[in-house]
Image 1 (cartoon, helix red, strand yellow):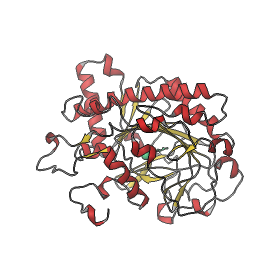
Image 2 (cartoon, protein in one colour):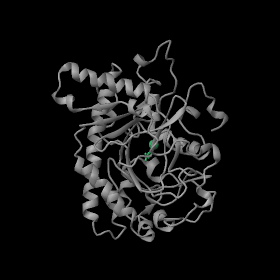
Image 3 (spheres, helix red, strand yellow):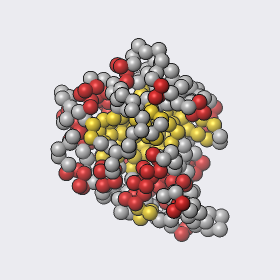
Image 4 (cartoon, protein in one colour):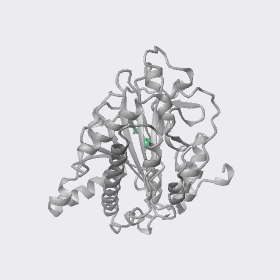
Amino acid sequence: MIENNSWRENTMPAIAVAPKPKRTLHVENIGNLSVALKDAATIPDAYLQPEGLRPDVPYDGFSKETELLPVLDLHNLSTGTADERQRIVNDIGYACKEWGFLQIINHGVPLRLIEKLRELAIIFFNLPAAEKEKASAGQVGYEGRHAYMPERVHWVETLTFVSGPVSNVEDILRLTCLDYTEEFIRSVNDYIHEMQKIVLVLLKLMAESLDLEKTFFAQHFEKNSTSVTRFNYYPPCPQPSMALGLFSHVDSNSVTILNQDEIGGLQIFKDGKWFSVKPSEDALVINVGDCLQAWTNGHFKSVEHRAVLNSVKPRISIAFFSSPHVHAVMAPPMKLVDDNHPLLYRPFTWAEYFPRMQKKRMEGKVGIDTFMRLDHKEDEDS
Ligand SMILES: O=C(O)CCC(=O)C(=O)O
Ligand SMILES: [Fe+2]
C-alpha cells in the first residue's frame, strides 16, 4: 500500500479513491505475463475472448484506409503562413469530426523523451512479478491482470500514474527497488509536462476549428486538470487471434495522446470495420474521448478502438488521458446546437461522470451514450 497519500487528497478523488471493481473471475494474477507464459503454446482460458470479439484483422493488417488517417504536421503552426496555419486548424477539425483520431508529427515533444519513456517501461515490465506488485496501489500503479469488464481478461500489464495537478509518480516508483528510480521519476514527470503542453495546443486548435474562442476548452485544463498516464505492456501472445490486448472501447476522458512503439496493434473501428493504425516512429496518436464528444454536442467523435496482439514481440504504448478540472462543467456552446444538431447530452462535470462511467463499464456498457444522453431514460438502469 502507498503510505503517503497526499496526492490522493489533492487530485481528482474519483480516479484516486473510487473502490476497485469487484472481480468475479478468480484467475490467478499472472503478473509477469511474458515470463510466466513465454514458452506456452496456448493461453489460459480466462484470456480467450468470446468468438464474436476475437480480432478479425491482425496487428499488422494495414489496409488502404490506414493511409487515410490524417497525419498533421504541426511544424507550420509557429513558422507557417496564415494560410498554412488555417489548414492545420481545418485538418484537425476534419479529423476530429470524421475519424475521432489523427496522428501528429513535428509536435515539439523531444523524440528522445518519447523513446526514453518506452525504454523505461520495458525495464519496469521486465522486473520480477513480485517487484512489480509492490507498485500496485488500487486504481493506480501496477496491474498485472486486467478485467475491464468482469468476464473478459486482457493480455496486458499496466502502470498508471495520476498526472495532475500533483503527480504520484514518485510515490509509486519508490515502492519498487528500481535502481533507476530517479531517472524514471524525472523522465515521467518531464513527459507529463510535455503532454500537458501539447494538449493545450491541440485543444486551442480544436476550438478554433469549431469557430469557438480559442481557450473555450483549454482554460479548463490549464490548472488542476485531472489527467492520467498509463503505460500498457502487451507481451507476445501465443494465440493472438483469440485474445485481446485491450477490448474494444472508447476513451472516457477528453483527449488522449498515445505514444506507441513501432510494432503496431492499435485498431480503429470505422465504417463498420476494423483497421490497424500504422505506427510511425515520430508521430503521436491523438483521439477524441467521450467527454469531448459530449462537450462538442457530438460534432467531434469518440471512436471505438482496441489493441490486438502478436506472437513475436512485446509492444509498449503510453497513453496520456487528459481531462479538465474535476468541477469544470462540460456544456456545449450554443453555437454547436441547432435544428440539425439538437442538444444531445446534459451538462456534467468529470467528478459526476467518472464514477458513473466506471459502474457502467463494469456492467458491460461502453460509452457515454449508454447513460448520459438526454434522450436516454437513465433512471431505468442507473
Ligand atoms: O495500446 C494501444 O494501442 C491502445 C491503448 C488504448 O486505447 C488505451 O490505453 O486506452
Ligand atoms: Fe483507448
